[in-house]
Amino acid sequence: MTMTLTRQTPYFFGVAQTFGSSSAAEYVVKRVAEGWAQLRNSNSLGAGVEAAAEALRGVAEECSSTDWDGYGAAAIEQETIRQAERFLNALPLGMIAPSVGAESDGHITFEWYQSPRRIVSVSVSPEGDLHYAALLGYSKTYGTEPFFGEIPSDVLKLARRVVAE
Image (cartoon, rainbow, N blue to C red; front, side):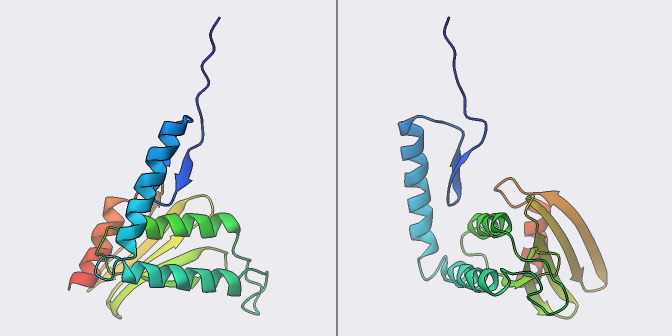
């Protein structure tokens, strides 16, 4: 009797992931992640994302303990930070990077802001949910989408509308 084992949780290497467990699968995923890292580190395509990643590290450190705001805020969990890093890595190359903040419920917030009536906010939870809200002129929209390593198209469209206009 032959038994085949498959990996149920993916390996993550930056933006790349695999359910494969062979050394070849890991090699390919590592090389893809390295290629994306080089593009992200380029001045024209990824400088903003690197600045946002640095801001994320600062927010994570500043908000790592309970009551970081003096009003009983929840600490930012490591899983929330990991999900937020994956979100930043999933941004399309050349996309203007968002500002980074923390919420009192322990979520990380990414925000694209042009004016008081042109703004999109995306909150990342430790469970991998993306809660978003947008104000585009007099139009409001909000919702929740699961995050599986790729930013949902509705969220990207809203962010692009804010930064493009």
